[in-house]
Amino acid sequence: MGLAPAPLKPSRRSATMPEAPAGAQREGSPVSEHSKREAARDVIERAVQPVRETRELLHRDGELKPGLGRISGVIALSLGFLCLLAVLAFHFPQYLTTPDLRHKYSVDVLRQLLLVALLVAGGMSLGNLILNRQRNLNLVAFLLVIAATALGGSRVPVGEFPDHTPYLGLDWFILDLLGSTLIFVVIEKLFPLYRGQAIFRKEWQTDLKHFAVNHFIVGLALLTVNFLLHHLFGWLVSSNFQQTVRDIPFLPQLLLCVLVADLAQYWTHRAYHEVPFLWRFHAVHHSVKTMDWLAGSRQHMLELIATRVCVLAPLYILGFSEAVMNGYILIVGFQAVFNHANVHLPWGPLKYLIVTPDFHHWHHASDDEAIDRNYAAHYAFIDYLFGTAVKSTKKFPERYGVVGDYMPVGFVRQQLFPFRGSKAPAESPE
Image (cartoon, rainbow, N blue to C red; front, top):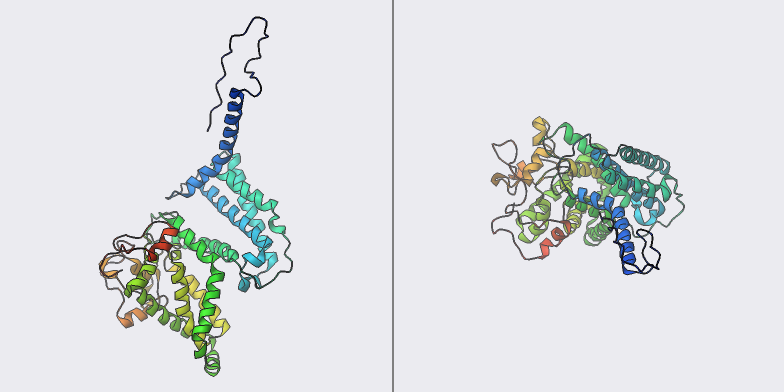
């Protein structure tokens, strides 16, 4: 923080000149202009200090100690930021919300949730400010709440708007981040595999950027996937056969849908490991060294689109019912997060039937016996059927990440990695 300028020594004056008041300076003098610049710099420094300290805090990792106002401050900051995004989504629903979801929302319920979040974030941050705990962090959180409220808060009117506009999946990002955090952080704390693992572990910032970008481009991804499905596989569709599939009762049809998707996922996933060019994209996903619910978000954007096309193509051709597809989406959404989580439960014989965190953690391990193993996403018996299940005397892996640890750090560098010169070791990728 800037220091105030030292008082100037009075200059010698003639006897006829009146003595200037202490500290007074002639208008327009260099010293006066310098003092003004110093004062302005000091004001700016004071204004940006809370933002700078908050930014520095968000670049750190490790466990947050209770009783210091930092945990509640981080919660208030997160809620305040998400509330501001939600208010923007209310203002521009045609550009910031997902068409498939916006028709299923209850606007009144969303308004109530936004109001509660604003009250919680505002109350937490204001309480910490009054108690003088983590003032800069909580000041930024409180200002976010004030900004969201000034922009209309939970009372933003939503009128008629066009339904076929380009959009960002901001609503899906907010809902998924809130839901995933509330559900999976609690599960990880109740049933941890690694008890000392912090919520804000190393490289959490990178994986949060992957999480955000993958959600924001959901519109472009779905548009691309739908275009490719219809143009590449549309000629394979048989309406009579699809009707036969839809006539299967819901539960067996859902189990069949998951099986078809997982067989497609298995061979697509295996190709990513066994074809060197494809591995360069998939290595981004495997570069995470700490497993938790956020780790599964680390994924190259092109792999995300290509995998969805390969997995959804057979489901599109077979024509499963809308209810079954919705059920499959819920299952794949849950397992994609849960199987990366820092969770350990006594699965018993189920571990040979379905994919669990224990099973998928081995896929991410860089232990010798884990290389190119455990490809399935839903049904573990597929790997046992094709001979690619991990066989180890150890209960849990010793280390995670790509063998050789050659993946660059940071979201942008990881997205560019497949197009740069190879730094991967010559042996088979993990």
